[in-house]
Amino acid sequence: MSGDERRRRVDGIEFEGTVLGRHVTPSAHSEGFGLELERSAYTLLTRIDLQGAMSIGELSEAFGLDASTLNRQTARMLRQGLVRRIPDPDGGVARKFEMTADGRSRLRADRRRRQEGLGRVLEGWSDEDVTALAAMLARFNAAIEARDGRPWPRP
Image (cartoon, rainbow, N blue to C red; front, top):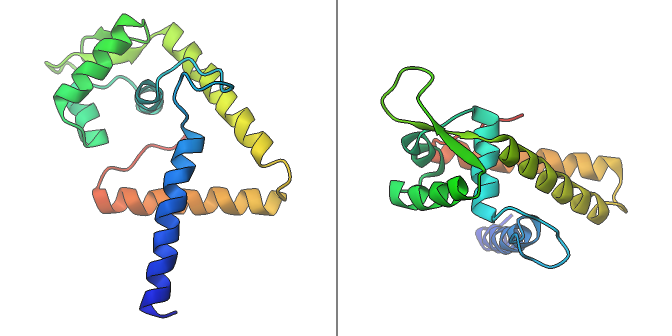
């Protein structure tokens, strides 16, 4: 494949990735989705669900975001009752954010709605195509994580 052709394909991947992000992570208030959580809360809760309680510093490192951004997001999540602050279970100085039962319930409900929506989109796809898409997305995400040094834990 020529350099120009590869560049066109990469350009296409960038565009389709942008569109995919719009479809896969709709805003919480998008009509028809029935989601309760804001996009940032969903993402932060997903990480806390996989990794356990995390401090602002750990969240900052995991997401590559500055502490002020995360302070605003976690303050909103505290007000909504999605997380609570706890002392560091390992004895560290920084307090950590732990998901509440309500946060866990709302995360599970939104995840179920998202998965049901994706299932409807993929209804006409063969099992092999669904498996291939899942594998390619996992490979793509792993390559990004390897480059930026911030791997996500996997369920």
